[in-house]
Length: 117
Length: 115
Image (cartoon, rainbow over all chains, first blue to last red; front, side, top):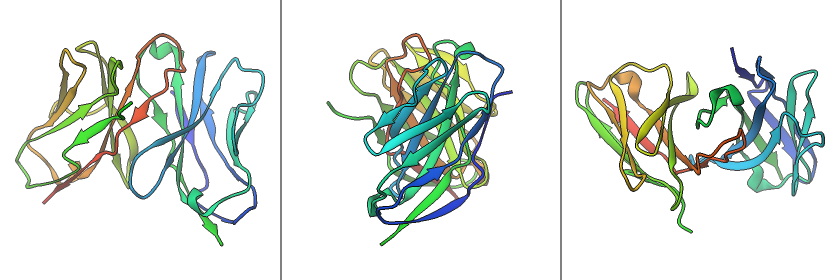
């Protein structure tokens, strides 16, 4: 069964430093997509970055990059040069192609990131 | 382009009552998905509607239902509310096309409290 595991309930990082948030996944499908979302205290989910299972290069979006290791089934989010505004909950999510054209995302439990000044 | 809107933003109900939540997707988006977020269970998929048809359903009791209108707006209904239904309900819209990418845009959520 498809599953997302985020083993870090909470993380601290100093402002301007880089931080890695861990995500491992389990799926029997060969075609799937991996997403990272940020959820500030306001509650809205903000899309950060996407990695497809067939993408050979790691995805990057500004200060966000995804360290995709397919054999290990891991998709870690790297935030470079942390800012105070990065303090939020971060979710890793997956969609399987077997699900067809559906909007079903499976989410991990999330990691709370706090950036210290 | 306006984002996903959800109404109401906050709601307080008592056990046994029913509630209807509304979601207006981004213009042109035909898919609306609903999620329940609680501290204990995290984010869980409720269901997805595409072109007025339920396309996928999560593992929730029949008290949770939804529908989608011809303008893609969606409503979610919970009948006979229980204390455990207290949660943040998020809706997400997407174009709904083929492929796993299909980025979902989330609304601000409706925070439901059941007393």
